[in-house]
Image (tube, rainbow, N blue to C red):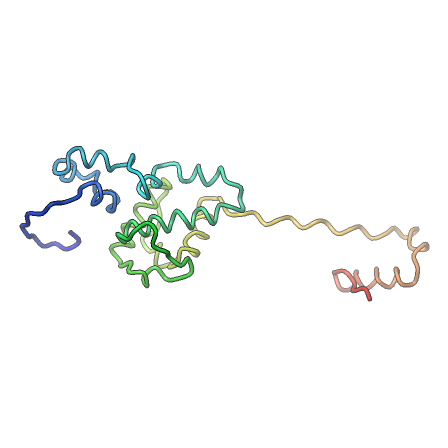
Length: 191
């Protein structure tokens, strides 16, 4: 199917499984006609990884605490990648491993990019998986692109320096520590 070659075959095909592993194929008029009810059954209402592709992924991520979004997105991306690769859902993918090392070729990369663009309802660059070749890198990029990245905790404001009037009440050690803190921009080490 990925080549522009014609072959005639008679095969028994598990249409729901085939269509669930090929994002967008179920929408093709040819496959709707050939697969009939199986195509409709395997479309967005399917179970397993195909079900998680339903529009609303962005909303589900928004509903999570910001500290949990990255892990949830990496898991979702892993599911989608396994689906495109045609691997079992329980296959482990290392989030730091290059996707090309898992067997993802350029046509599969385009298929995955298209599925993600549809799932997030946002156009994504054709070079997405070449620019972000691991699940970790892809998740970080998508979180930024979707405006869902974890916000860094705002550091507490440093305690204000005592007023000049209060400095007279400081011991020599406290005054030295305060001076060191001001010079170093940090806190003095205590012994």
